Image 1 (cartoon, rainbow, N blue to C red):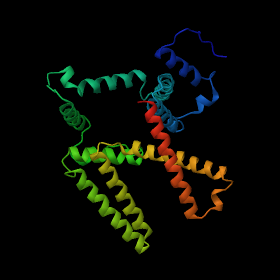
Image 2: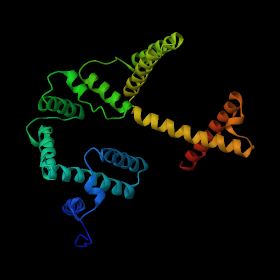
Image 3: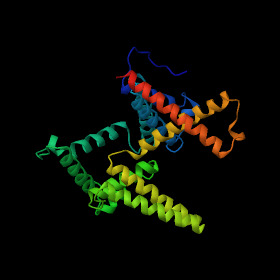
Image 4: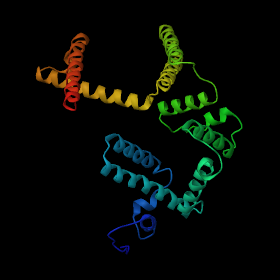
Length: 277
């Protein structure tokens, strides 16, 4: 058993020490076996759970989930320190220096009176400090591990800052129409490889349209997925109440239930909005 003083309040130093103890010979077998790769997905999952707490506006849950994110950071730093690669202090040092360098309007003599100027300066400094010699480098640097929609939107945003963008929302939407036609042609030709390519182009065009509308494509799709799940559940309950099963109905009959579920949801949303007014 590892000895550790119980405290009414713990700090970041305590967290670092606890993780070290868990990784020590007398600690936890599971913790000792982990590597950067084995807990990679844990870091992603904890970040998503923290994001969900933000969406729910649940501060108690956010506090808990941010702790889980912090645990992952400390865990990776502890493993890196064991490998003599870097430690937690080195991570803090690097991010502090980065913040100071990228905020010359706060820590230097540069004047930036609006967000647009701040972002322009940020991009220029980032490009210089990362040794990016062309705008294409800034696009390539967008993490490939990001969800596809988020990555597409970020790439499009950086391309726009470099000067390559649609002139308006309508121009972006024209591209959606054009890519839709190309996908239809690929489907008609029965070319699976071309279908995949054209579908990707269509999705990318939709993301560009979302960006021009000031909408986050990832959040928009998440909301649409949640809406689909709720509508599916409503339709399924209606079927159950009528003593029917999904697999027993024709496409037209299913569509009727789907339309009814959509209308039911619309009324529920209306009533909820009226309650808050």
